[in-house]
Image 1 (spheres, rainbow, N blue to C red):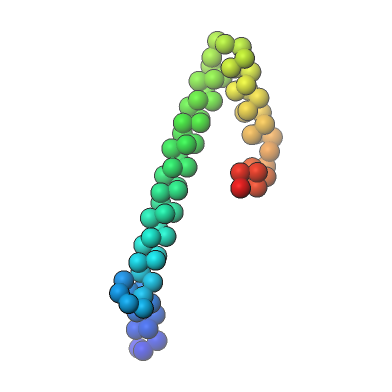
Image 2 (image 1 turned 135 degrees about the horizontal axis):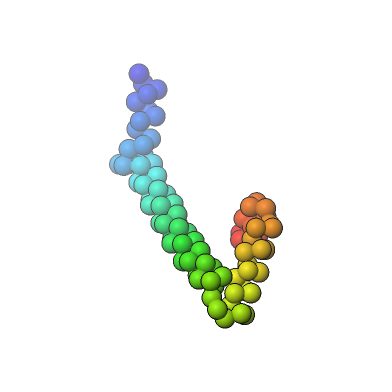
Length: 82
């Protein structure tokens, strides 16, 4: 029982516990995920509208972006982003 109590004590929010650190890390992770989702939606809508555009340079740029992103493996995109 003492081992279980000490493990749960590490998750406490008081002195000697890491609960506050975990809560802060969760909030940061959730914020980054929400911002990434929003940026992805906006980029996707902009790309779709660009491909449907009647302006040739804008449609060409959107097609180029789509072709480049489809041609690259996901891990390479992650490597380039970071």
